[in-house]
Amino acid sequence: MSASNQWRLRGQLPKVGIRPVIDGRRKGVRESLEDQTMGLAKAAAKLISENLRYPNGSPVECVIADTCIGGVAEAAMAADKFAREGVGVSLSVTPCWCYGSETMDMDPFMPKAVWGFNGSERPGAVYLAAVLAAHNQKGLPAFGIYGRDVQDASDNTIPEDVAEKILRFVKAGLAVAIMRGKSYLSMGSVSMGIAGSMVNEDLFQCYLGMRNEYIDQSEFLRRMEVGIYDQEEYEQALAWVKANCQEGPDVNPPEWRASREQKDKDWEFVVKMTLIARDLMVGNPKLDELGFGEEALGRNALAAGFQGQRQWTDHFPNGDFMESILNSSFDWNGLRQPFIMATENDSLNGICMTFGHLLTNTAQVFADVRTYWSPQAIERVTGHKLTGRAADGVIHLINSGSAALDGSGEQSRDGQPVIKPFWEITEDEVKKCLAATPWRPANRGYFRGGGFSANFKSRGNMPVTLMRLNVVKGLGPVLQIAEGYTVDLPDKVHQILNDRTDPTWPTTWFVPNTTGKGAFKDVYSVMANWGANHGAFSYGHIGADLITLASILRIPVAMHNVPEAKLFRPSYWSAFGTQDLEGADFRACKALGALYGQYR
Image (cartoon, rainbow, N blue to C red; front, side, top):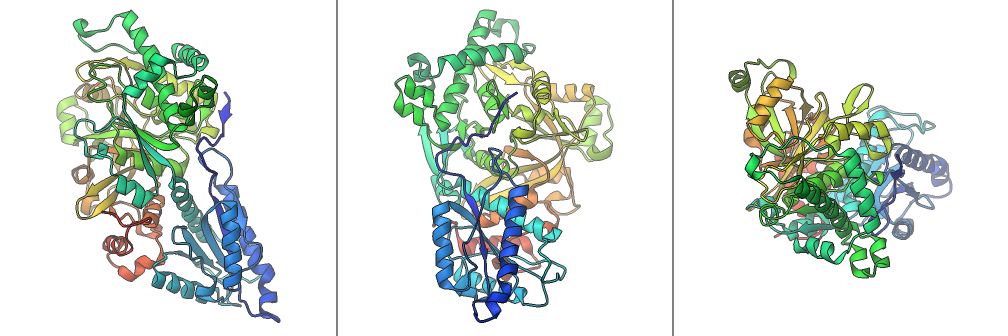
């Protein structure tokens, strides 16, 4: 199966700028440090390019300043080169004392970090402290990176603790840089009074640097009726669907069931919806060939949301197939970067999916945070006693018919279920994801217009991170994070519990890691403190990466279960308290304000 690493959005991918900073004193001091300083820069660039990839699968590119930076003139030269090269993240490195404010990166929107080499010959740590003080005094937060162990001056290797922080910072910084200037596309408007679908333009503009685009759902009908889609691709897609997408049992009462003829028409309809939604997001040069040059351009949308309920779904087939396939890592064209498509146009969940995708390069799973099942309730209803990781109960994550097929857990690494970046997925794993996902005729009690809902059950023992962005009056955006695991329930137990909700929808049984205190006292407390009806989960325990990303955006984290030792925020945060780190986060974010302007 072919894989595409095409970057489908307008604008180049941001690069990482490496700034080798040096003591500017000539006639011996600077000259003695040139090789070591540039060596650190090259080592950092090698570390980044060998370990990180962009969402399209290509290696992250680094740009090193042409000369070491010993003062303001060379800082300006580096900034000029970075602007020409499309740098979006800057990392300064030094083994020695340098001149703080004269050498620092002054770009107010550029995520920035400084690695001060821990050596005894020259005081890299002294420069690190001095330049961070300058950053903080000027309100230009920077991350400080300092190794735990002293290294010899001749040692250009990067210690594990330093490498971890560099990579965490760069991942988060690149996510910030990629979002800037891109669009969130609302397909429709507010769904069923869900607050997250009341799109907040100030949030996107001031915190993410993104713009908002809108289309009415009638645009789907116009494009279908006028033929504004690639007919050849449509035929290819429909044939692929017929060959690979198994139709599951119909739970509707006989009098509500659609005829075979109508179901076939619904399949044709939802395939066209999928093509049109993709073209609306990123454009399609084929449309220009058909005479639709404006439509061919798309909306440069990094993420989108589809309202669906109820004005659309009361009359037309639902968007479940469209959302599931776009969010997945594959379709009829082969393996490719997942799209981000939020159910019910919940833009706040769409933001979380965007965060997760940019940090991991994997497909994201949208879900209702539906029910906390206590062990007592499960035993009463099913006769089964929960044990092991599920002993304190489980949270039922189940979306109304849509989720990335990657969420089935049918990809594997070392014998364990995983969700992989698309370039690592095998053809056999694609087949397994498809085989694990019957497409159930939509429950017409919810979806009067019909359609088809993805119906998989996630495999257990996957480390995942559930997240949610909420907007609170008087506070602004706040992020919630819950690391945990998917779990397996016996088939009979799953069926009994699932049938009480909706047996046609995709299910994940989730158990957060509990700490015995606060919102993570137990599984019930996580559910009770969750801020909305929706959440998105990403494969892996990425809470630390999310917290680093949130700090760059100045979004406080209201709830998380990430070990304190993994927290990595700019040094600015330390001035707001080192005992109550959660409170310090809120105070620092409030003092700085939104990254791109005043949020109202």
